[in-house]
Length: 573
View 1 (spheres, one colour):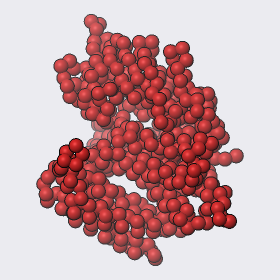
View 2 (view 1 turned 90 degrees about the vertical axis):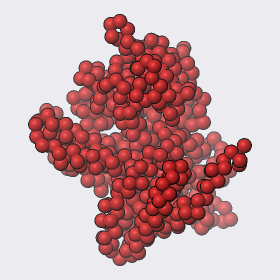
View 3 (view 1 turned 30 degrees about the vertical axis):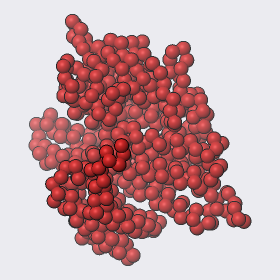
View 4 (view 1 turned 45 degrees about the horizontal axis):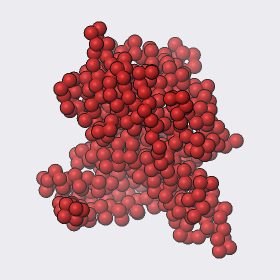
């Protein structure tokens, strides 16, 4: 039988290279969890064996249960039945099987019925599920909602809500967006108010809510009357009961299995999560960062599926007396797709490592505080990990979602006219990919989120260390190219900062972020190439292309090719 884990050599390569020793040790409380739960790992190798077994189960379910029904899910979609949202039959079956396999609480602690797994392993599961059926990720992959309650909710809230997520009894949604508050969440108007007994209630409308029919909702609402900015917003949790009316399901281009809803809250009883006024500035930012990692993995899964479709079709389709796989123009497209796919996966799991480290060190700091021990060194490391994760998270979402769209586009191109037909899976993948660089923050917003770390060159020490290393054999010329890209970046950065012009910095941000990504990904691939001969080719193609793109990025900055933005009204109106 097919298995999306064991048959994916590159995913296995990434799994075998995981170095999660410190992360797992903190998660398992130095393996004292095994004293309470006899199924908890006793050491790091035991934990890795557990992770592999679970990922094999996810790979099996993805290939043999979820993927075969993806076309029907896309056609049937989520729909209204007697005023309620009903999942497609294939979605119901998938959620039933995932719940039976106890996979709906991946990162939640065992005391709440979860697996207590690192984020990195969860992301690998999301990638496989998304490869099988992208819209299912928007239900399976919303486990970050439970994580937000775990991090910021009180003990009573954790005890009430988290076991429902782990068991699969409840699905969730994060209700943030409103008709007049899309990317600008400071403009949220939905009202939160307290009655005479201190009970919170919600009143207002949310729009474009992924899985808006979820059983448990996290809602961003204006708790401070008279305010108009983010400081007046708080986070609430409530049930999607009869006081929450689904006004409609959006008729979308893709991801049809996931209901995107408009919701009306009619004095809905709710509970405050954490502190008042911290809804946007702390809790939503944490929630969104988790969602952005999830969407990056979703995009990676779609890209893998699109590549597989292109490769299979190119080998089977004959033109001019030979398979089009053997036509150089087609082969080159396939190679570019493969290089994008593998370099993206390298970035994905490097980023998830830093996210894991940030979160686990934060937990360790808290434990040390509670024990009355010195935590200064751990806190400093946590701050460092937080800065790196804060850069890599938006960078990853930008790169992976844009690449997923390109890979899907190229896959359809290889299919030719047949790929445009509903009978072929690629047309669905093209539609599903398109949302990934829009929701949970558009590509443009990811650039805005990443540029601060780039301007401050927060990976400078990392790049300097890599530049000093001598790489074996034919890899050293590639390392020299990366040193040159670093020079191009620093020269471009100086050009931008010397101008001391915020507007100019904003329009140059995309090129600077891309330049920085070439360096980070390039060094990841070099490290991989030292231990795997296949990766030598991937590193070579990626770094040579990156050098050419780096020169183009620098030219656009220095030649101020975007200076016509100053005259936008003259051009556009």
